[in-house]
Image 1 (cartoon, rainbow, N blue to C red):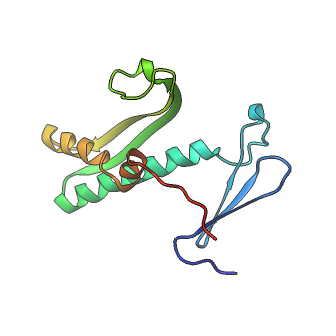
Image 2 (image 1 turned 180 degrees about the horizontal axis):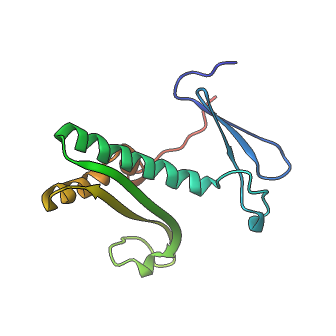
Length: 144
């Protein structure tokens, strides 16, 4: 059965963590590492989340550079996820005993960019749609 455009379907069994993902005509597998009880047949859900953010950032940077006809050659983005206590975050306004998710990103750009072009592309990276979604208040709801 074909799903509506924009609908992602995730299927998994009651045993183990392996999940088969359909996104349009694309097929992916998610799993947990062996150390977490999985079989490591695919990236973990957090790895997929980081991949979504990193690919959106990279696409946004490249699109902006193409639009401006800037000499960007490649974009490499490294991302990692961790959890910290709010009390360890100087800019956070939440209870000290609350755990916060932190995503660290490192963007590397290559090409004959001026300092101003490089700076602008770094700024644009954090304005990609997925970044904005993750930074906003998100409502996740069950629909029938």
